Image 1 (cartoon, rainbow, N blue to C red):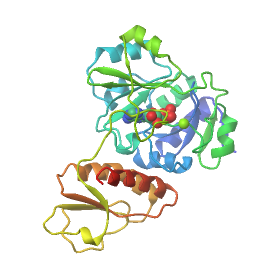
Image 2 (image 1 turned 30 degrees about the vertical axis):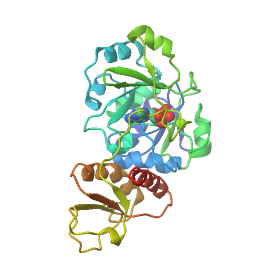
Image 3 (image 1 turned 120 degrees about the horizontal axis):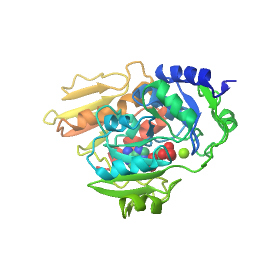
Image 4 (image 1 turned 45 degrees about the vertical axis):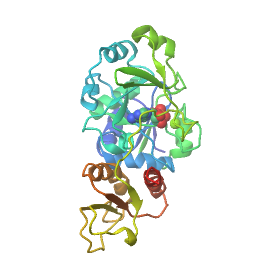
Length: 320
Ligand code: AMP
Ligand code: MG
């Protein structure tokens, strides 16, 4: 069994696991989180692998010290300060423009990052001892209920996490409220443990997030998308045209003599975790180069391969 009652000793061990790129399930006041080093893309890829989610979604970075917010996001807005002074630690997640420090896999390629300070002594101590933000979605497998006690996590994810910290039952039991700052206006993306009215008492009226048409039932709605500008297609030799600047994402190797403007290999050893960790940042790098076309190789839809292919399919669809 890898479940330990949370105390100074077990939390210290858990923080060492986080620092070395492992997975730790830990209690917050909302639900148990499946945590990894939020600045380590390979560690974050392990979260998606363990959850067996067939798609990526952006993760919340959990911090224990307000000063981390300035390292992870860049904004100038007094109301943000008012919100964090009033509601942190607590069930309020803020979505703000991200800095370079935040790996693209954490935000699923979005230019914004979600940050929260949980109101739970075990979570705060773990984050503090780890010395970095912890990326964590709820510690359940895709399609299962969110866990509110350690035994729930042990049952479904026990063999997938390096350690489970048992801190008793979660007190709030519902997810955090998510608010996004965009062009100096605040949008409520998801209702949760903190009410819209309580937020409005502090910063005035806020808007309700615009639902994503493609995902009408998605819990957190994403009104402002990262959408690539360069056409992206699945690799086929018929698209190779020497008059075009073509960038390409191969899975394991580039077997072609074609003069690509840029050719990237997601993982030379064919490791899906490494491929997932590189996917979003390589797409961004290619996107920045004003190419005529980006080609991506298909990969087998096994394990993380499903989430990678889901993301690539969405990206190719935007240009159909
Ligand atoms: P949770 O389910 O509590 O782990 O929260 C994750 C949710 O937060 C995601 O499904 C999104 O709805 C939302 N979220 C995280 N990052 C972002 C972001 N950069 N922009 C908008 N929403 C986000
Ligand atoms: Mg969840």
